[in-house]
Length: 110
Image 1: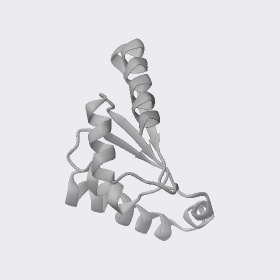
Image 2: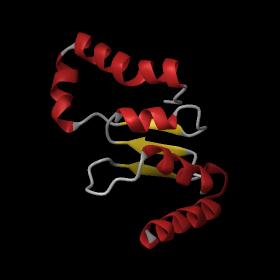
Image 3: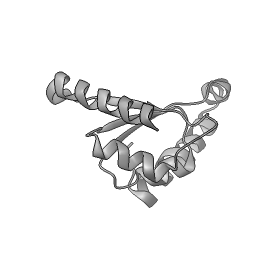
């Protein structure tokens, strides 16, 4: 837990150095000891983080980011890129399920 606080302290200091443009962080969900998404969002807010990149549209992370004031950038999993590139319908469905749903229902700023 100490390492996590040191990380966020360093990020907060970098944000102060960068100035008005701020700092964003990457949030991956493939780990063995994940913190609950609501706690992660609160840590981000407490440390002045205004932007986050998710490597995939994790449902619980997306819900927790709703109406948080944190801007979200979504990644597409590598194993899904070919399917998205090969079909407009698949791409549209991905956007509906992974972006539009969370924007309209939870207020996520994607």
